[in-house]
Length: 366
Image (cartoon, rainbow, N blue to C red):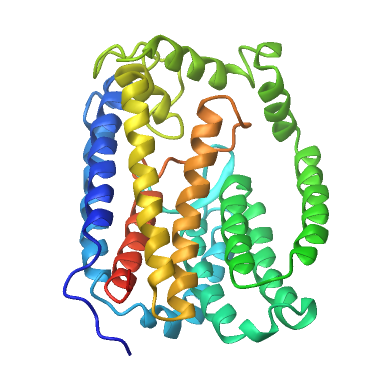
């Protein structure tokens, strides 16, 4: 086992805490009006986000000091636990329904989303599998098929909730890991065609998903229905201009943009802080991804490298999808913006993942 450095990656810690701080400020700013109306407490969402952030940061620093090889040892157990939770959440009366998806376990506001934790468990398991079976990865039958079979089993269970956004992030992350491990491009081309056909089938099979596609192509075809969110999001971003309207001065959070503290928080940030504020956040994400890539390249073994690739790939995919949706470049998917959007499971999961990445950085040579 290589000797650990005295300290983890400083820039990764700093960038994560800066993003988290921006997120805390924006969750309060975006949610204060709605929270005052619904709960008679403008800090309702901010207090809960602060609690989630505190738990997540504590977990990040704790996990930062646990050798990342521990995840290799327990990856099978973690995946099995997550599969069990994905089964439990589908039971009526046990799983909580929010936004039309039965994705939650818990009581009231304090609940967890098993599909979020499945993403990290699958990353750890796949990193272990691919590092051990790396010599078979060019074989479709011995290498690629077994790994994809498990991924799509988890995807199928997540789709039963249904939660296409989370499932797509997990699959996309796993595909990146498999490609980096050395799989043949020809295999990906064939699977890509099948994947597009299957993805189209999932969209066609659900009328609400078809509405999201049509509203993406022409939101004004249904401005008060499926196109409402994206129109209001663009109404927020547009007036922000270069400098923004000022922190706390958003107009769209006054009951125009539904629950602006979650998936569309970047729209409120752009409205209040303008192009400069939005660019600053994107630059922070770019810095985080750069440090993650350096850690993956410098990791002492294949498992650590693939684990780092999976974590940084998960963050990158969520950022691209969320900002793409908010700016009208992609259909609405319900994906949160890492470290900024309100949500306990998503925030805690991301901070735990960064903790793992920080531990890898203690062994990386770069």
